[in-house]
Picture 1 (cartoon, one colour):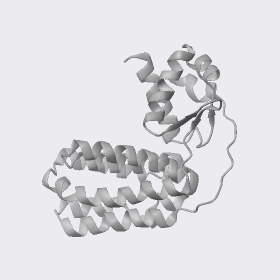
Picture 2 (tube, one colour):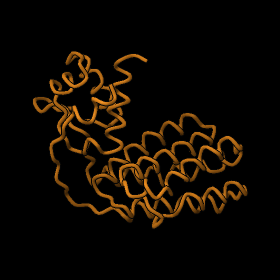
Picture 3 (cartoon, rainbow, N blue to C red):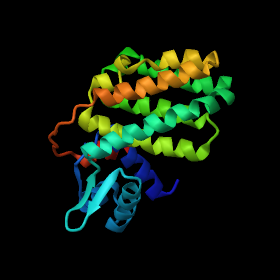
Picture 4 (cartoon, rainbow, N blue to C red):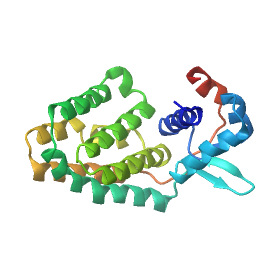
Length: 223
Protein backbone atom coordinates (compact mmCIF):
# COMPACT_ATOMS: atom_id res chain seq x y z
CA UNK A 1 0.00 0.00 0.00
CA UNK A 2 1.29 3.44 -0.92
CA UNK A 3 2.43 5.55 2.02
CA UNK A 4 -0.01 8.43 1.36
CA UNK A 5 -2.90 5.94 1.10
CA UNK A 6 -1.92 4.40 4.43
CA UNK A 7 -1.77 7.82 6.10
CA UNK A 8 -5.10 8.78 4.56
CA UNK A 9 -6.75 5.67 6.00
CA UNK A 10 -5.17 6.22 9.43
CA UNK A 11 -6.36 9.83 9.56
CA UNK A 12 -9.84 8.97 8.28
CA UNK A 13 -10.15 6.26 10.94
CA UNK A 14 -9.00 8.69 13.65
CA UNK A 15 -11.54 11.28 12.50
CA UNK A 16 -14.44 8.83 12.22
CA UNK A 17 -13.61 7.31 15.62
CA UNK A 18 -13.29 10.84 17.07
CA UNK A 19 -9.73 10.52 18.24
CA UNK A 20 -9.38 13.74 16.24
CA UNK A 21 -12.27 15.90 17.44
CA UNK A 22 -14.37 18.06 15.09
CA UNK A 23 -12.82 21.52 14.85
CA UNK A 24 -9.34 20.32 15.88
CA UNK A 25 -6.44 22.07 14.11
CA UNK A 26 -4.25 19.78 11.97
CA UNK A 27 -0.81 21.42 11.74
CA UNK A 28 1.15 20.21 8.72
CA UNK A 29 4.49 20.38 10.55
CA UNK A 30 3.35 18.20 13.48
CA UNK A 31 1.69 15.66 11.21
CA UNK A 32 4.76 15.53 8.97
CA UNK A 33 6.89 14.87 12.04
CA UNK A 34 4.48 12.24 13.32
CA UNK A 35 4.29 10.33 10.04
CA UNK A 36 7.92 11.06 9.13
CA UNK A 37 7.08 12.39 5.69
CA UNK A 38 7.32 15.78 4.00
CA UNK A 39 4.78 18.54 4.56
CA UNK A 40 3.95 18.18 0.86
CA UNK A 41 2.94 14.58 1.50
CA UNK A 42 0.79 15.62 4.47
CA UNK A 43 -0.80 18.40 2.41
CA UNK A 44 -1.78 15.87 -0.27
CA UNK A 45 -3.59 13.73 2.31
CA UNK A 46 -5.32 16.73 3.89
CA UNK A 47 -6.51 17.93 0.49
CA UNK A 48 -8.03 14.52 -0.22
CA UNK A 49 -9.81 14.54 3.14
CA UNK A 50 -11.02 18.07 2.42
CA UNK A 51 -12.51 16.96 -0.91
CA UNK A 52 -14.47 14.32 1.00
CA UNK A 53 -15.66 16.91 3.58
CA UNK A 54 -13.80 15.39 6.56
CA UNK A 55 -11.35 18.28 6.76
CA UNK A 56 -11.66 22.00 6.09
CA UNK A 57 -8.74 24.04 4.74
CA UNK A 58 -8.83 27.82 5.01
CA UNK A 59 -6.27 30.38 3.78
CA UNK A 60 -4.00 31.59 6.60
CA UNK A 61 -5.73 29.23 9.05
CA UNK A 62 -4.63 25.85 7.78
CA UNK A 63 -6.51 22.57 8.12
CA UNK A 64 -9.02 21.55 10.76
CA UNK A 65 -11.16 18.47 11.28
CA UNK A 66 -14.51 19.35 9.74
CA UNK A 67 -17.06 20.71 12.18
CA UNK A 68 -20.48 20.62 10.51
CA UNK A 69 -22.78 23.58 11.04
CA UNK A 70 -26.29 23.02 12.35
CA UNK A 71 -27.70 23.42 8.83
CA UNK A 72 -25.16 20.99 7.37
CA UNK A 73 -25.82 18.48 10.14
CA UNK A 74 -29.53 18.52 9.40
CA UNK A 75 -28.92 18.27 5.66
CA UNK A 76 -26.65 15.23 6.09
CA UNK A 77 -29.26 13.35 8.12
CA UNK A 78 -32.09 14.49 5.84
CA UNK A 79 -30.13 13.19 2.85
CA UNK A 80 -29.83 9.81 4.53
CA UNK A 81 -33.55 9.80 5.27
CA UNK A 82 -34.25 10.38 1.57
CA UNK A 83 -31.71 7.89 0.20
CA UNK A 84 -31.32 4.87 2.48
CA UNK A 85 -34.95 3.68 2.57
CA UNK A 86 -34.92 3.69 -1.25
CA UNK A 87 -32.10 1.13 -1.26
CA UNK A 88 -33.95 -1.42 0.87
CA UNK A 89 -35.73 -3.11 -2.04
CA UNK A 90 -32.41 -3.61 -3.84
CA UNK A 91 -30.86 -4.98 -0.63
CA UNK A 92 -33.60 -7.61 -0.36
CA UNK A 93 -33.31 -8.50 -4.05
CA UNK A 94 -29.56 -9.07 -3.59
CA UNK A 95 -29.84 -10.66 -0.14
CA UNK A 96 -27.35 -13.47 0.44
CA UNK A 97 -26.04 -15.57 3.35
CA UNK A 98 -22.64 -13.91 2.95
CA UNK A 99 -24.09 -10.39 3.21
CA UNK A 100 -26.25 -11.42 6.13
CA UNK A 101 -23.21 -12.83 7.95
CA UNK A 102 -21.25 -9.59 7.51
CA UNK A 103 -24.10 -7.57 8.98
CA UNK A 104 -24.58 -10.02 11.86
CA UNK A 105 -20.90 -9.67 12.81
CA UNK A 106 -21.29 -5.89 13.05
CA UNK A 107 -24.46 -6.19 15.15
CA UNK A 108 -22.71 -8.66 17.47
CA UNK A 109 -19.91 -6.14 17.98
CA UNK A 110 -22.49 -3.41 18.65
CA UNK A 111 -23.96 -5.59 21.39
CA UNK A 112 -20.60 -6.59 22.89
CA UNK A 113 -20.69 -5.34 26.52
CA UNK A 114 -17.05 -4.24 26.37
CA UNK A 115 -17.59 -2.24 23.17
CA UNK A 116 -20.95 -0.73 24.16
CA UNK A 117 -19.22 1.52 26.70
CA UNK A 118 -17.09 3.17 23.99
CA UNK A 119 -19.18 5.80 22.22
CA UNK A 120 -16.61 6.35 19.46
CA UNK A 121 -16.55 2.64 18.62
CA UNK A 122 -20.35 2.50 18.64
CA UNK A 123 -20.57 5.43 16.23
CA UNK A 124 -18.09 3.76 13.91
CA UNK A 125 -19.92 0.41 14.02
CA UNK A 126 -23.22 2.14 13.26
CA UNK A 127 -21.67 3.77 10.20
CA UNK A 128 -20.18 0.45 9.07
CA UNK A 129 -23.56 -1.29 9.34
CA UNK A 130 -25.23 1.26 7.07
CA UNK A 131 -22.30 1.21 4.63
CA UNK A 132 -22.38 -2.59 4.37
CA UNK A 133 -26.16 -2.56 3.99
CA UNK A 134 -26.05 0.00 1.17
CA UNK A 135 -23.37 -2.03 -0.62
CA UNK A 136 -25.78 -4.98 -0.76
CA UNK A 137 -28.25 -2.91 -2.79
CA UNK A 138 -26.19 -3.42 -5.94
CA UNK A 139 -26.23 0.31 -6.72
CA UNK A 140 -22.56 1.15 -6.35
CA UNK A 141 -23.03 4.87 -6.99
CA UNK A 142 -25.64 5.24 -4.27
CA UNK A 143 -23.68 2.94 -1.96
CA UNK A 144 -20.66 5.23 -2.26
CA UNK A 145 -22.90 8.22 -1.53
CA UNK A 146 -24.23 6.49 1.58
CA UNK A 147 -20.64 5.73 2.65
CA UNK A 148 -19.78 9.44 2.56
CA UNK A 149 -23.02 10.39 4.30
CA UNK A 150 -22.48 7.77 7.01
CA UNK A 151 -18.96 9.03 7.71
CA UNK A 152 -20.15 12.63 7.76
CA UNK A 153 -22.91 11.55 10.12
CA UNK A 154 -20.19 10.31 12.46
CA UNK A 155 -18.90 13.87 12.67
CA UNK A 156 -22.43 15.15 13.17
CA UNK A 157 -23.00 12.74 16.06
CA UNK A 158 -19.60 13.61 17.54
CA UNK A 159 -20.57 17.28 17.70
CA UNK A 160 -24.31 17.18 18.34
CA UNK A 161 -25.18 13.64 19.39
CA UNK A 162 -24.97 11.39 22.42
CA UNK A 163 -25.13 7.71 23.31
CA UNK A 164 -28.86 7.88 22.48
CA UNK A 165 -27.90 8.66 18.85
CA UNK A 166 -26.30 5.23 18.34
CA UNK A 167 -28.08 3.09 20.92
CA UNK A 168 -31.27 1.09 20.84
CA UNK A 169 -33.23 4.27 21.54
CA UNK A 170 -33.07 4.80 17.76
CA UNK A 171 -33.85 1.17 16.96
CA UNK A 172 -31.74 -1.98 17.16
CA UNK A 173 -30.14 -3.05 13.87
CA UNK A 174 -30.96 -6.65 14.77
CA UNK A 175 -34.65 -5.85 14.29
CA UNK A 176 -33.96 -4.76 10.72
CA UNK A 177 -31.95 -7.92 10.00
CA UNK A 178 -34.94 -10.08 10.95
CA UNK A 179 -37.15 -8.14 8.52
CA UNK A 180 -34.59 -8.31 5.72
CA UNK A 181 -34.05 -12.02 6.24
CA UNK A 182 -37.83 -12.50 5.95
CA UNK A 183 -37.79 -10.29 2.80
CA UNK A 184 -40.30 -7.86 4.29
CA UNK A 185 -39.81 -4.87 2.01
CA UNK A 186 -42.39 -2.39 3.34
CA UNK A 187 -41.69 -2.98 7.06
CA UNK A 188 -37.93 -2.71 6.39
CA UNK A 189 -38.36 0.60 4.58
CA UNK A 190 -40.55 1.93 7.41
CA UNK A 191 -38.03 0.77 10.01
CA UNK A 192 -35.16 2.53 8.24
CA UNK A 193 -37.12 5.77 7.97
CA UNK A 194 -38.04 5.68 11.69
CA UNK A 195 -34.46 4.79 12.62
CA UNK A 196 -32.94 7.75 10.79
CA UNK A 197 -35.67 10.10 11.98
CA UNK A 198 -34.91 9.03 15.56
CA UNK A 199 -31.21 9.77 15.07
CA UNK A 200 -32.11 13.24 13.83
CA UNK A 201 -34.37 13.83 16.83
CA UNK A 202 -31.59 12.73 19.22
CA UNK A 203 -29.24 15.51 18.11
CA UNK A 204 -28.78 18.48 20.42
CA UNK A 205 -27.52 21.53 18.60
CA UNK A 206 -25.14 23.18 21.04
CA UNK A 207 -21.45 24.07 21.02
CA UNK A 208 -18.79 21.74 22.39
CA UNK A 209 -15.24 22.55 23.39
CA UNK A 210 -12.26 21.40 21.32
CA UNK A 211 -9.10 20.43 23.17
CA UNK A 212 -5.57 19.69 22.01
CA UNK A 213 -4.32 16.26 21.03
CA UNK A 214 -1.07 14.28 21.01
CA UNK A 215 -0.65 13.18 17.38
CA UNK A 216 2.26 10.90 18.32
CA UNK A 217 0.08 9.04 20.80
CA UNK A 218 -2.68 8.50 18.23
CA UNK A 219 -0.66 7.60 15.14
CA UNK A 220 2.72 6.27 16.25
CA UNK A 221 1.47 2.76 17.05
CA UNK A 222 -0.01 2.56 13.55
CA UNK A 223 3.27 3.22 11.69
